[in-house]
Amino acid sequence: SAVISQKPSRDICQRGTSLTIQCQVDSQVTMMFWYRQQPRQSLTLIATANQGSEATYESGFVIDKFPISRPNLTFSTLTVSNMSPEDSSIYLCSVLGDRGYTFGSGTRLTVV
Amino acid sequence: AQSVTQLGSHVSVSEGALVLLRCNYSSSVPPYLFWYVQYPNQGLQLLLKYTTGATLVKGINGFEAEFKKSETSFHLTKPSAHMSDAAEYFCAVRISSGSARQLTFGSGTQLTVLP
Image 1 (spheres, each protein chain N blue to C red):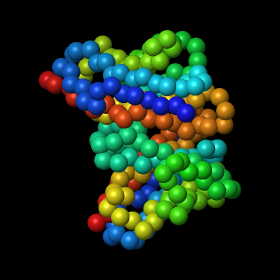
Image 2 (image 1 turned 90 degrees about the horizontal axis):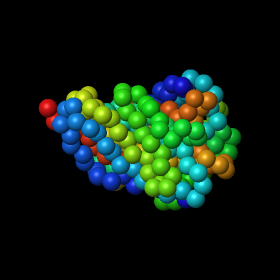
Image 3 (image 1 turned 90 degrees about the vertical axis):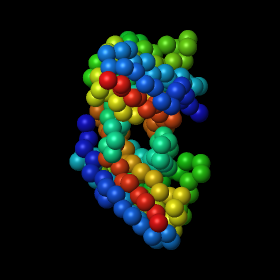
Image 4 (image 1 turned 135 degrees about the vertical axis):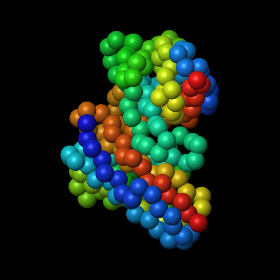
């Protein structure tokens, strides 16, 4: 299955700032997804990152808050903008490759 | 739209006892079903999945699950719990047709294994 490198693994950020999370895959994949896992909760899909076009956002998530880039079939970024303590969470990248779904190890974000 | 319900946010079993984690799904089309395990501070690892064919699916670490369409269930079992099985378990569903490929996750079940 695909191997994902997700960076940073964790960060502590000041409120009002932005953080960009990177997801690098070792092979070309058609579909990439970004999830949020809030403390002691399940994974919630933020958006599907589409190569060469705008991401498809789920209800409750907007592009201004979570802009996503997908410049090619192996790379995507998620930015958490104008952060508040409520954005403290684990953010995970996931891909769907030839052998199924693979998840990154996540970015643990704490907003202070 | 599809959804997943995991009954029991916390399950405790004794080492050597049967593990049963419950998952029910809702889907307007035939689903693909998955069980994932998440150890502390780690990503998700696939335990097993059902797409088509045999309804009893065997996965890694001795886990298995049975797809029961009549009950809309996909419960995860393991005959004998091991201390290393302590983790968070997530059931997930995806529709089997159309262009949507994202997974929808249940709320998770924290499994504790008692010595």
